[in-house]
Amino acid sequence: MRMHRKSHLDERLAKCANLTIADVSEKNMKAAAGLRNLIDFNAVFGNDNAVHLEIGCGKGRFACELAKRRPDIDIVAVEKISNVLIEACESAEKEGISNLHFLNCAAEVLPRYIPEGSVERIYLNFSNPLPKLGYAKQRLTHPRFLQLYKGLLKQGGTIVQKTDDGDFYRFSLESFMSCGFEIVEKCEDLAALGDADNIVTEHEQRFMDMGKNIYRIVCKVK
Ligand SMILES: C[S@@+](CC[C@H](N)C(=O)[O-])C[C@H]1O[C@@H](n2cnc3c(N)ncnc32)[C@H](O)[C@@H]1O
Image (cartoon, rainbow, N blue to C red; front, side):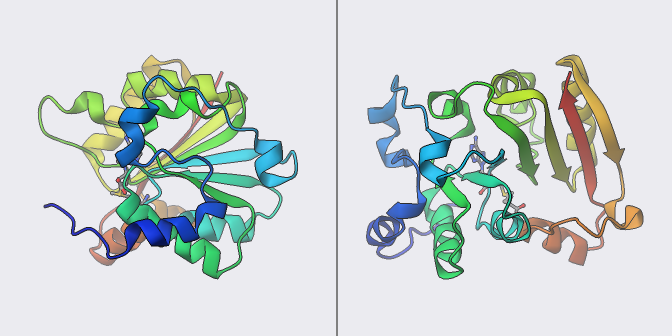
């Protein structure tokens, strides 16, 4: 289903320009092809704190909450659809959050913007499971993406993935192992685990309300 473009989107994005690191919205993707414009995190955040990356942040509930709970880290939330990202930007702006910035681009082009070995943790929260035959390569835990993330992560850096989809969970586990990640945690029922530090995302809340199990994988670059 095609999403209705939000009214005054460009003006609203422009108002949040202080929170977006690079102007690479889908409209500008073609112009950005081949471009390499590495982000200087120290300059963006004004400190040298560890950087955490959320890929596919949607409306930003997780990233905003993480930023508030962890003032000691810097967070970059990535979302390819500006129509969705605007809500995340406006929430962060409204709440006066300063340790969270946004990157409006697709995961595929992250190495153009994120310096090699600069990220401590990557979050993949409820990425689209894309179950249809022939779509495996588009899944954000396909080996082609894991190799890309490996390049961005520091030595010993981690990836935390959550999903409500059992097949996607098993596909991801296989994929992490085949790419040489060490599996630190594999959980098939997060509610039963009772992790008080878990930050519930928009989609997670929806799936929990439907009574679905939440799966979580934590893995580490060896
Ligand atoms: C199912 S939503 C989950 C949103 C949020 N993380 C949550 O848990 O509520 C997946 C999000 O990932 C974004 N996404 C999908 N593929 C992406 C890609 N290749 N690069 C960046 N974002 C992507 C989608 O636009 C969508 O907003």
